Structures are given as C-alpha cells and as structure tokens.
Length: 186
Image 1 (cartoon, rainbow, N blue to C red):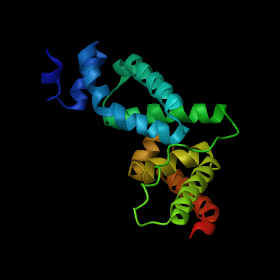
Image 2: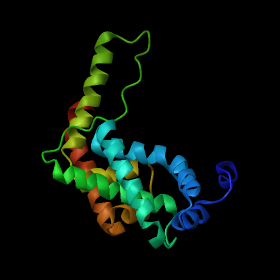
Image 3: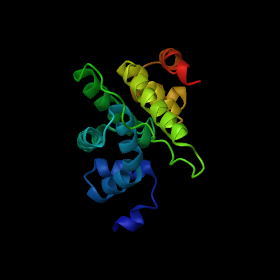
C-alpha cells in the first residue's frame, strides 16, 4: 500500500499497522506529528540539536513500544508523553538549566520603530528565556504545553504523567515565577 493511500487512515489505524511492523504507516505518523513534536522539544530544551536528538530517541522508543499501544489515548497524546518525558530526563540531567532558546524571536521591528524599541523588545525576549530557564523542568513542561501548544490540563497530565490538579499547581507556580521575573518589563 502506498504512503499516499495511508494518509487517508486515521492515527489509530496507522498506529495499529505500525505496531504490526508496517514502516509506511509509522512514516505517515512521523510526518504528521514530527513537526509539532520537534517544536515541543525545542521549546523544552532550548535548542534544535538537542531537540532533534530527543525526538529521534522518542520516535525510536515509540517504534519499539507500538505493539503495546492500546489506543486508550490518541496517538498524538501518547507521543507528547514520550517526547515530554525524554526532554524532562535531559533537563534533569543537565542541571543547572540553560536559558530556553526556543522562545519565539521577536518580529522584525516595524520600519518606523526606533532602534531603542527594537533593543527593548530583544531584551524582553532574552529576559523571558532566562525566566523560563529558571523554572523546574516539570513547571517548564506544563507551562510550554499549555501556553505554546494549547493543551488542556487533562492532556498535559497525560503527557507529563501527573494528575490534572498537579498540572494546575505547576502552571500556577510557573506563571507566578514568570510574572515576578518579568515585572520590570510590564
């Protein structure tokens, strides 16, 4: 069966086929979910090289574990969990945390914007990176999944492996810490 015709199947069927050894089905899942998983890893780890390694390792792990995939959660949610856990392991191993480099760069200054305004915007982005780097890996993961990926508390709980109440607490503490760290930029 060609990769094109596999594109019409939903993730659950593709995951079952991949779990049975169908490499084409897994390739479709990787193409479908890979970009968002890489963006997540870059946001959690702060750089493309480490992020690519983490996603690659997560995909290898997923391929090996696909026969165990029961479809209780969506394939995408399952992959979020695998990638998030891999990134958390990397973050825990690298203490102290380095600044998060994957925060969106500021838009190019408007032509009429002053050089002072452009410098101020750049400094604010660097301050946010530093503030995110100061969060615990778990707080950072919850905050990134909520603010950058717009996941629900329940989906974040599944991805990180904690309760929705614990997610709420970590996001609350992350927001409080970021608000305090960014108070000078208000």
